[in-house]
Amino acid sequence: MKALLNTGSTIYEGQFAKGGEKYSEGYMKECALCWISPLDFEELGCPEKVKVTSMDGKHTVAVYTRCTDRVMCGNIFMPRAIWSNVVIDPHTFSTGSPIYKGSPVDIEPTDEEVLTAEDIVLKVYAGGK
Image (cartoon, rainbow, N blue to C red; front, side, top):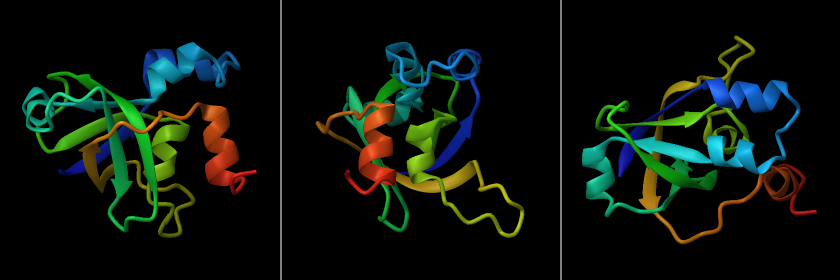
């Protein structure tokens, strides 16, 4: 399913991040999430987890789902964190900041493991070391 990815801070994401708890279980529960509208969630088969893939197909991340009417159909929301950063387009168009709103992505149900923040750092950014 094609969707537009919007990211942003949540109260609890900020609390964990500013409190130095980015490797905590609470941070993962708050941030390794994809918020999906009820209609889109049902169309996907009500999955526990989805794989979010950048439109160029180069970047993908598995996250848990949260069905909520706070998100419009055709859109998804992910808290601003390492999980969403995997699929955000890194181009900044000379602004120094990537586009965190309206990034086209593909989402599909998955059985893949949701990686911890530490595992993402090691596997995605450190080349699997």
